Image 1 (cartoon, helix red, strand yellow):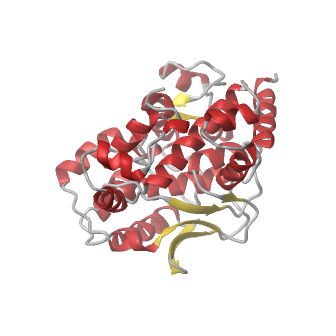
Image 2: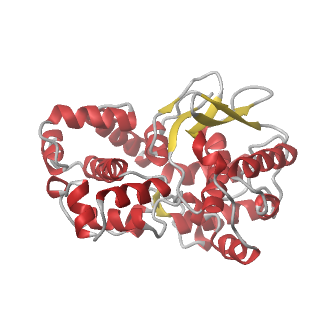
Length: 340
């Protein structure tokens, strides 16, 4: 499977984006047809196609936030936001500027950067009732995507809390963020390591033009496959069965560097060898479970786990659900989407 195959967006997110048109009594079929999509999208679509859908819906309603803020985020706001943060000195300064900008544009929800317990948290506050999970997700996509681009690396997300109740497609949210996701919490927040706040910003106007040409598709994949040493490590691992993966020292030797050099260079990209292996195993596990082929024990063996219980523990850490429960939930969700 190629990286392009993995850059797919769940049909449930397509449905939620189109809800913006439904609420305004606008037909969805013409927008979908303009992108070469059927009237009913029941299969994952590429990040590029979803990005085009985002732009098409925004153009229809003149709102880049899908009509989910107190005030519309008029077309062109995202571009202005990027210009607003381009010349910040550090990521912390850029994030604070971005939060002020979004607060002025949207008015509600409002975001705040909170630093505590070794984490940096983007905390969202609503004036009234909780918004949809899709609204919070959209806010974080914009902010996290810009942050990753500004520092030129993927910023690993440590946890995500939603103030709203879990939607029926909750499994899609857990898969998307790649971090522990909890619903029905007092506030909505996205957390990452505070150490990245001190990273310098070194982007040019020309680089911004290139970035904007690919937005928002390029932020939907969260810089997971950016060029760099981590990408090379991922590529090597994907060419080998998990049960045959090399140790860090053996991999370093294959890549003609010392173990300490490999470790430090991965750390500089905000990565680790263990985290990359975990990420790939997680993706393969979900892919195999969604295909419905093989037992959980078979999948555990394919992923290189010595016993199914180790796979169960790892999968619960990734998604908060057991492999069997995840398979049942996604199958039930697919059945609901297919129902007339």
